[in-house]
Image 1 (cartoon, rainbow, N blue to C red):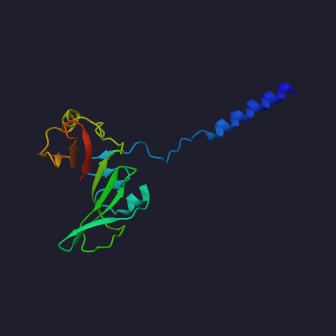
Image 2: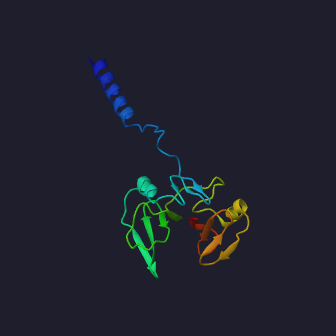
Length: 164
């Protein structure tokens, strides 16, 4: 009797651990990739903002406007992603508005194929992309591949990447 109770207990514990094991889901994307000049995995520049909503969920859209032109954006704080839409004459957001740029900050953990992401060093960025085509202490370094990189106050570590 003791043998069968112990066996059943181990069998039960094994089933519980096996049931709790996370399945390898082929539909779950791996780490988000930064695609210079294109976008990020799942969100492409020039395509509707609906793709961001499909990927990260619905958030309250925000906008800023000057001279009758409004720029709408979707902020995903927990993802470290801000999706900016092309300027519009409408002060009302529509998910059909096209993505103009994507701003990436911590905690975003995606990388380029060269391994560049938030937290990379300026030395690594320049080794991967060459010298910037323009540089500003406030606006960051703009590279010919469609990325703008902003560094920390010391100018040594990536704090923000914008894909345009």
